[in-house]
Length: 518
Ligand code: FAD
Image (cartoon, rainbow, N blue to C red; front, side, top):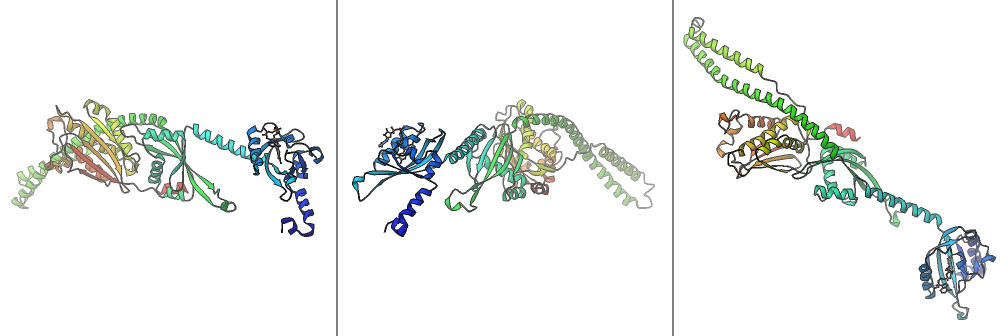
């Protein structure tokens, strides 16, 4: 049973109505593409009535802009009995062009070979579809062009953390930083910096705006990026996602290079630091000198106190007032004590800096910049090996600067021996989940094992006093390290120089960040 007979007695009529009332333009042509039949939809689309086209070739619809090889392919298919589908540029009766989506199917009457071949043409006006697709393509092209020439580095990161799309500016960052995937380093830096707030922002797809991330470059100047994160949701293109909500999340990372502006700020900040440094150095020297004097004076005063106590016991309570030796000893102790108090009073107060989140890469970079001249004049080369990004520690930046400056000056001083050829300092940083570690390694003579504890005592120096060593450096260092809950170690395994390793706990993220991310 064929389809029409399945429609019963009225089959042919229903079939005819279906073709007549179809919304798609239907044409039937002979082998030469001469029109035998068109339905009303054809008239609606083209403007031609049936009587105007019957007997004429379908080419009357051609706008004469469709490339020849499109027709060639069409006819090649049709002549081998294959259907053909494609898009042609057609002209309506009023001369206006439209895009036609055409399917031509060769039709032959199986029981009558003499009838020859016919062609069934079905076509729709897809001008609007084409316009929308073109708008979309133009839009995509425009966005791609803007992204390609954008001065900011852009990377699209999928939910597995892989960079699936980037732009030339991002590739420039890759080569400048010598890093495989700076986007990963940015995400790590933001996570370290913001802690819970970052996890919260990621979980709730909150955008992050203009977060500054500093990258260290081995042996070179640091660079800064202002980083923003946005979210992009890609809807599934699979058919089962047609009515569903299937989608994938992407993170759009934008990195704006602010190095030039930050370098200017840094130059100004270093100039101010230098100014403050000479003042605080003077105060520090004064504190050490007065501290030394107090320390030296305290010994004799203690001895006099002991001698006075002995004398008091020997003369007995009755003779205490009349014993001239006891009186002299008491006077001497009192005078000594007053001198000590006067020295204490003259001591300039130690400036207590404000505690905050400190990036040790920045502190060390400051120290290296501040001491450039000293390093150059001592002929010391610096091998600066920072971790690209470092979690913050909690501390006083000024005190930490003093600490590392002292360690650097010690290293320079250790190598500043006449005829000492090897003069290198390696300054490196690295981080684990819990701690940030700094190591300063010099190629000097090293600290003999027997003195490794003693060097931290106040006023102890391996240098002879006439060379100006006050012997307070490492004790100040130790005090700053302890105040910051740090650990300082002279590496016992290191040979050919001295390697000092200082580590501090990673700072926990303050609650204010969490509030900010809300
Ligand atoms: P033509 O000189 O007519 O043909 C160009 C090339 O096509 C020739 O070099 C030849 O290789 C091949 N060719 C043309 N006619 C035949 C044929 N009868 N047998 C074998 N090869 C042939 N064209 C449109 O532009 N718009 C339409 O909407 C459209 N609808 C069509 C519907 C049907 C059912 C059929 C069968 C054809 C349709 N055509 C349509 C194609 C049309 O018949 C023309 O081939 C086309 O318009 C090119 O015409 P032309 O005058 O520019 O070139």
